[in-house]
Image (tube, rainbow, N blue to C red):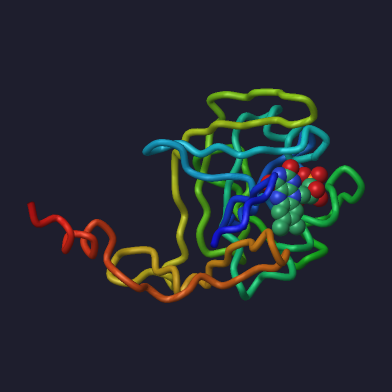
Amino acid sequence: MKLSFDKGFFAPLPVLILGTYDENGMPNAMNAAWGGQVGMTQISISLSSSHKTTNNIKLNKEFTVAYATAEQIAACDYVGIVSGNNIDNKIEKCGFTITKSDKINAPIINQLPIAIECKVIEIQEEFNETRIVAEVVGLKVDEEVMTDGKVDYTKAGLVIYDTVTKCYRTVGKSIAAARSVGKKFDNN
Ligand SMILES: Cc1cc2nc3c(=O)[nH]c(=O)nc-3n(C[C@H](O)[C@H](O)[C@H](O)COP(=O)(O)O)c2cc1C
């Protein structure tokens, strides 16, 4: 029997590390779980309006999204605990170094193997939340996490956020080919 609750949760959530610059060129990073792909080439992220990242995105209209990894999980968590509004060297403090993107005005974190480069196309303000819709304009991937010319989730050590137990989990092994394993029921 299924139990019924008044509220729900959405799972699994990604662990996205947003990279931005402020008005003085100071790099910042924050951890965001409320984000995902919308359509073929866009993403949407929901941010508290008080975050430094939110102000930086409104200023530059450009940002990077790196995927957190198991290897860097402490640093990825740290940038979700402290705010660049209160500390100047947030990135440096957790051991991250950055390279400026060649496509947009946003930092790429060297220690995280995959980053997408995004340009804002819409900003919605509601209560104390800022919802960003952005176009993905580029992708940077470390050669070491590629297999046969494709991004390899296992090599990259990607993680997800578990909202129920409030922990990070690794992404598991491949279990079936998509748009393929279900074909066994398509026998009309
Ligand atoms: C696992 C995790 C997920 C988070 N997801 C979000 C999110 O989706 N949106 C948001 O506004 N804040 C989120 N936060 C909180 C921010 O990362 C945090 O407040 C951070 O200090 C903001 O940094 P900034 O002010 O330097 O931008 C999350 C934090 C953690 C640890």
